[in-house]
Length: 79
Image 1 (cartoon, helix red, strand yellow):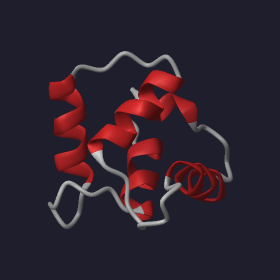
Image 2 (cartoon, rainbow, N blue to C red):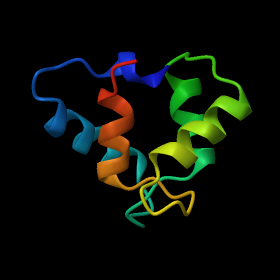
Image 3 (spheres, rainbow, N blue to C red):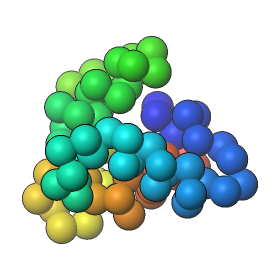
Image 4 (cartoon, rainbow, N blue to C red):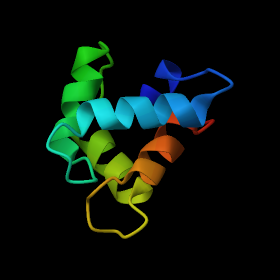
C-alpha cells in the first residue's frame, strides 16, 4: 500500500514532512479523502474498502481522522 513510499531510516522526520505537506488546511489530521488523494498521487491502487479499513485501523481515536502519529504508523507499518 502506501507504506512503500517511506523507507528512509529517518522515517519520523519524513512522515512528519509528508503529513504537513498534505495537511494543507492545518487541521492536524487527514481524512479518508485526503489519503485517497495521496494514494492517487503516488500511483498506488487501493480500493475504497481497503482505504476505509486503513483509516479505521490507523485512527487511534477511532474517529476517522488520521493524526500525524497515525500517519507515521501507516507509512512505516510492515505487513
